[in-house]
Structures are given as C-alpha cells and as structure tokens.
Image 1 (cartoon, rainbow, N blue to C red):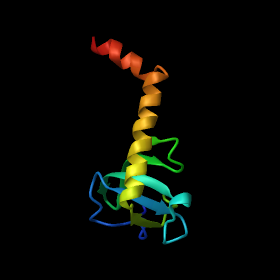
Image 2 (cartoon, one colour):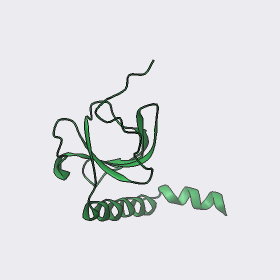
Image 3 (tube, rainbow, N blue to C red):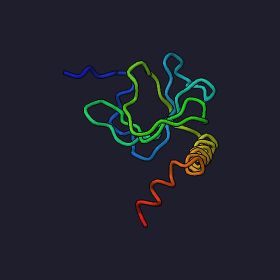
Amino acid sequence: MKRRNPFTEHPNLPSGTLYLFHRSDRRCPAADSLFGLIDKTSMGIIYLESSSRDLRRFRFWHRLPKHYRYHRLASRSELRDYIFNLAYYECAAIQSGIGRTCRTLVR
C-alpha cells in the first residue's frame, strides 16, 4: 500500500497549474522551492507534467518526491518566468539535435 503525504495531499490541484513545493518552509520561497506544473492527482499522489528547481534544467512526467511537505500557487510573474524558461529549454534541446531525430521520423 502506498503511503500518502498529508502535507501535499489536496484533492483540488487543477491540472495545468503551476505550484511551488518546499520541504520545510510553508512560505515556499521561489529561490529555494521546486516549481511543478500539475499533471494530475490520484490516490493522494501528485503527478507533475514538468518541474524545475532552478528554472534552467527541467524534468518531465514524474511524481512529486515524497519529502516535499508544503505547496503554494505560483504568482503570475513566477508562472511567466517558468513558462519562458521551459520554452527556452525546449528550444535549446531541439537545437542541440534532440529534436532533429523526431523531425526525420515525421517526413
């Protein structure tokens, strides 16, 4: 049986919404938190579409790690910064050759 985290359990975390998660600070300061774009919540487990700790490197399609206890909704400026940096990260991945393989398969 999976253990639930009572601190991050929330039935109404809408998908497509950006939250900040923190291990010990309930204020979830942006400089020290995990940014996570919600995919879904199921059985008390939060699944993320993408996440980043530093807005430079991103991780995709994973569960929220268990040690994150607190969360808050991202501000509009935090959402803007996250989406801009995510798009930049994806463009850089395409330019480095990761996306070229996909394009040749489509042709």
